Image (cartoon, rainbow, N blue to C red; front, side, top):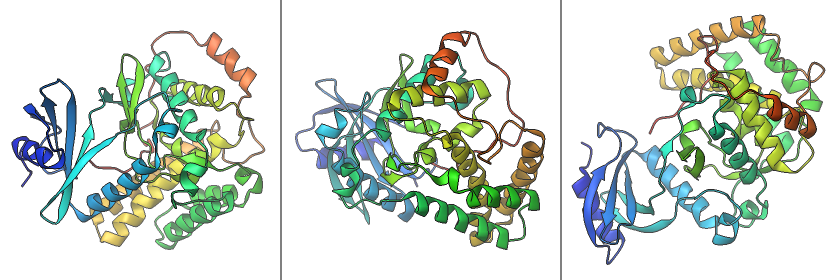
Length: 349
């Protein structure tokens, strides 16, 4: 049973000695998510958030998050145009622990509610660019994972091979993925610091700007495209292009012209991962869902020639081309939606 926000408030007083709490409110539905969470308000009107994991997987994620947040010292945080959670204290509870963080105002981004005219799109692109511009010493000095370009290709190939072994992936998708994985030009990129588990919900939004980024448990050095794959689920191509454009402008490095192709590949492989998850759990509902998504993706990529994964067709715009696109993009609502087989990250809070 989920812990009440009153119980969580009591835990926060144990985690943060001297905390003078005057009120508390729950976060979420209270129906058994991955964390029991609440916001507590202090007498000085500052707010804290307290979270207790409800499963071993959530406990592991929380522990990794703590390591990453410790690595993100004030010097690194000062390079970011948004807030990163700050740990105020912790206290043991049952077989886990309650962690108290400083509260960051804002609401999680909802991808379906964004459009290309929304300034939030550019703010998200700039935020990701700033993460990728952090010194890699942030990761290496903290003993966090480091993945080379070759490593990224190898991991993607393993996912493809394991999915192929299930016999449930359409042959045209396997051929598409194999072509991309064998294309050496696609994998010539400079690894950067990456968040590692970005999704729209990772971004807190207020006043049309990113105010905070959450969920740092997968912080590492790796392929920057891994932080951008979720844009394949954007409700319009214009929105994705605006985020990528702002990202490229914010990087101040030579444009990675294969970035968007790798991001698309990772997005498609997310469905393969969902299939593998269902197979490992022997969950026919998940397996059936993944098969349906794969079938839809097969139809989608066959009819959509604008998203090839090979490097000899199409190019990502250079910085000057992006600047011109941003000047010419009309500030009007974009309401077109993609087909029903949108690729999405699999997450639960």
